[in-house]
Image (cartoon, rainbow over the protein chains, first blue to last red):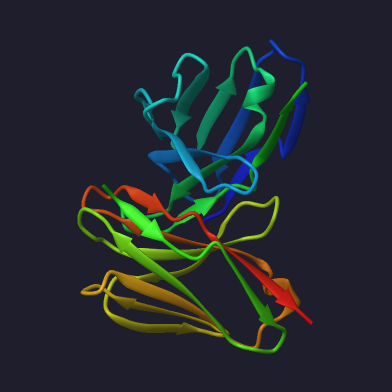
Length: 116
Length: 109
């Protein structure tokens, strides 16, 4: 149980275009989902907390107008990277908890974004 | 500030035992996780400790001492597939998850 599906697994896009990444909890409801970014050989960096039915909470330094998050239902959150630039190339990973706040995060398989 | 320390890299031999340490200073404590992350993949959950002591799960065990702000992940009978990064993460008093930078474990034959 507690499966998180993330799509696409990888995407290559041209500079200036937008990319949407989907994150779904397949067998549980997630009122909260988390979006992380990870650069090569670095640790996970929390970008934002996605809340179902309300605005996302962004971490300091993360541009909310660039990284649009929509948590439309209890099983789906999307991250849209708008006007992507090469420096946005990274590994984006979503996660969710299947239970209480001290229950483990379950991660999607991640999306490798390359902006050319 | 909040801080989690773990070694950057460790090397061990196939079939041996390795212990990966994690020390933390956080505002409150509501549990500690260990995750495994293979290169290019997302993290996968290994263990959760909230009380002092040792939790054993197959070849992997995790230990916690809350008074010392210390945990370790013990991997026995190492296999080549155990080559990965191991991430320590602590839940603070606000239920925020604080991540360590990870320990890259290299297994040699």
